[in-house]
Picture (tube, rainbow, N blue to C red):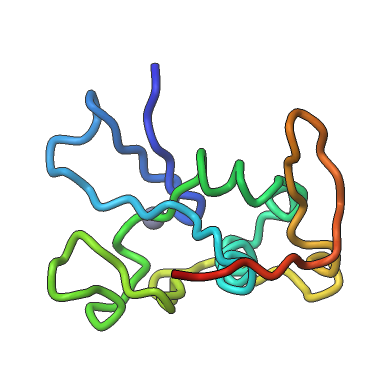
Length: 120
Ligand SMILES: [Zn+2]
């Protein structure tokens, strides 16, 4: 069964669980921002998950964002939104995140230096 789990509070949302259409935000592909998101979860194992996988499989629920983090449509976050509410864990240290992010190229996972992507 597939459902989304909030990496901060463990809230589950999915077809079965989600009667209220809980807002679940995907981890961003932007490296600096994604790093901050991983940092606030306090989960060291997430620091070693390639950024593409974080973006594809990991979520943070809407409770951790301020109203000002959302665009006018409440279903979209602003580009620079960082979870900041109801956080009960200690953030990860910069040390743990020095190698972040890992990348997937094809099926191999390699650690690279930061890559500059063109943003549209
Ligand atoms: Zn949550």
